[in-house]
Image (cartoon, rainbow, N blue to C red; front, side):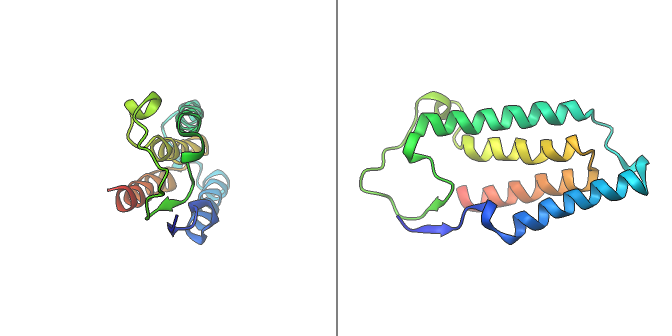
Length: 130
């Protein structure tokens, strides 16, 4: 199948986002500690675990049909998955990734990148899955 884009983890925007997250963490911990998020970091840990769990359920449900690359051409042997987690969530991979991304920023107490990650992931998902 033809892919519309490479896996997000292989891209410069992803590396840039993670670098900005680490930079915000270092800056606010060393220079401006009061910039920390009011949300307990354990909320972020829980979000990361739930997000990762949702992604893994999607992978186990879909098996080889789950891919990290966006498909633009339907494979002749593709079947729509509607059971398991796909019966509850249309795109468990994207939902899990959104929770994981924002959760990492809550763990790091990054207010700016937490909001930024949420917006960017939502726009990315909306652009590719709608």
